[in-house]
Image (cartoon, rainbow, N blue to C red; front, side, top):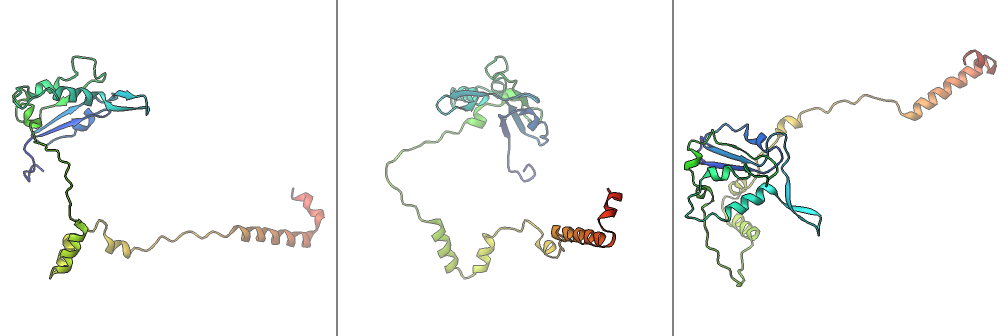
Length: 207
């Protein structure tokens, strides 16, 4: 992604048990990572709902959202303020971690709004909007196109398995095992031959 210029700066927020173990394997530059727990620690839940018997949110996410709700577009709070979230308190219970050595800028010079500064205007409406059926549009496009085969190749899946190699593989030959009835019949035949030849008197010499 870096070589193809698909990102400039990335912030990873990992809220899971032993979250620090995930960012330890990062190696690309301009990555910053926050984790809710260290290796060997659990990331605990918050805000249980007694009606359904489950927790609605993790503790780190809860206090992170609580912190970000107070950030305005003109805020001068920097990433150091976000990194130290829950560090000097027992709110998160677990020990949050962070990694900033791959980030080229100092975290103190990076504003939180660089990552969370997008503000979109939302307009609510009660009007009904009729959207065209995408499947019908695609079907009509393919039927009207002069190069149908080329269009189908655009929407086709790439081969995930080497089918040419799989087809020519021979199935493994299973070991032959006689059926249970055959074995039972064989032993019956042996006993009949034995009794016919030696009689019941010789049976005591065997057992």
